[in-house]
Length: 347
Image 1 (spheres, rainbow, N blue to C red):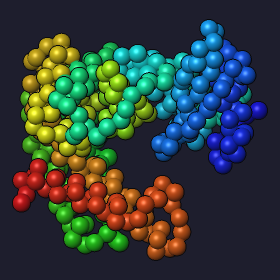
Image 2 (cartoon, rainbow, N blue to C red):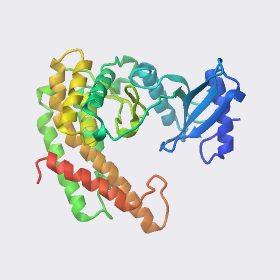
Image 3 (spheres, rainbow, N blue to C red):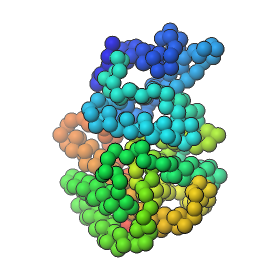
Image 4 (tube, one colour):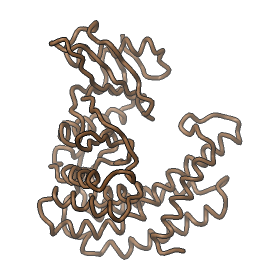
């Protein structure tokens, strides 16, 4: 029985899970006792599955089944699986099994270690916890990446990566349109112009022209993707990519609203995880440029959802990817835009 993830009856899905887990871990389907679905997961159905191990003790794992089965979905999932094999057991869950298609699911499916732990807003974490997170992030950034490159397009440098990222973010400025208030549209365009002007100056700085190679990035180190147990573990690696470590650090520091004491703690941990201190000075310099860039990208991400929700309401239609009211998305936009203008030297 093969299952396509579009509009699957829950009973059919659970039957597919039993078959897949049985094959992935080598246990009989009747030894699988519980499968409970996590509420989070925008592009996947994610389950905690319990089964009886060889000694009769209950063991837990996580199964994630993609909603999409297009070739691009498979390529992205294949890359994530390669990253998990590299980082699993230290910074990520251990990957047990991955299949783009299987007798049970037509879409990418992976089975991985269940990591016990709690999620928390990073601004509420202690300096000691943030320091340990900094050490983990540095370990990730320092992994060898030759086996993760998908072609010559990824053999870039810090300058080409920054230009591509900035171009990608600026392209989403197209969402700064009606029914967004005109004043908000104007603020977004002014901020985008300032960021682009800053790159014209920064691209020739020594910190961007060190010859340093791109590193492995988690891609989304937000509070929902960090589990706090004995130590921090990063989950949900679907946006993992090769890039500038300063990009990811800037995102983590600013998007999670870390205070000065927490930022100092992060850098203490990060220093412990890097091999030399000389490149670190350049990373710190680049973080100053990346913070407003990442904040602009985040604001525009929320702008898209604000506009889509408002348009769906005006047309009397639904949009499952933006289930909340326009005010929810507007609040996220304005909060980020206020911080962005302060970073750029505004009032």
